[in-house]
Length: 278
Ligand code: NDP
Image (cartoon, rainbow, N blue to C red; front, side):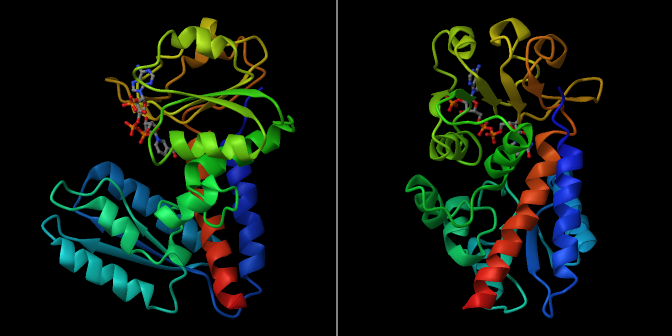
């Protein structure tokens, strides 16, 4: 069966819009885009549109490619101190001359709606999460939608990046699953995958995971977004062969992607509520 990320994300947005309509002050999200990378511009536009749809206050801040580190940090400090803003997101990747890590660490952790600040990652590690990285958290929402109990399941996460693979593994561990993390140096990946009740891929290589590597009845969540030469978007999983063996599978596009944005709004709402309760 297909896990319909678009529908699940739409339901979440509708629910948030209903809540927000009753609020006096609107939850606020500021999104900073440095430079004019076309993919980043599309992501930022989609995030802004989603904010408007649910009735959030939104600030889209475009900065030139040659902004200095000090200028960018000053902009973040301004937003840290702006009471209309509950969430701050700096679209990654940043131009090479900027230190992304220092930028993330400058965001007030209570406004870090991407969940990348070391304080939020630390809380996730301790299983006391506050703002959780959007893509892995969105994957957990998709898994919940299948109704399958994760406790004790064998999960294989392919990819170990700070923004997807590592926090994904921690989310699954916090859900009491047994987790294996694979990366580019992993030996015999097909055999590792064959043991998995749940597979989450975040690699960035088009259609590398074959259906024959997947255990019959496994759940397959494909985070990868890869563009083929013909312009079409595909995941890390060869969908055609994998859907024949999987019990549940996410499509690309229309799976994890829409959930990432809906989860960003969800995090902004959590940050808003925490600030309102202070
Ligand atoms: P990174 O490039 O940061 O990480 C890729 C990971 O895959 C690394 O851990 C790398 O291993 C591992 N890897 C590379 N080659 C192989 C291989 N042959 N076998 C096993 N593992 C391998 O990517 P991201 O985590 O940022 O993104 C991954 C994908 O997810 C991309 O396609 C990206 O576009 C997509 N994405 C989608 C999102 C969404 O909302 N749907 C959000 C974010 C990302 P090593 O650590 O050894 O280098």
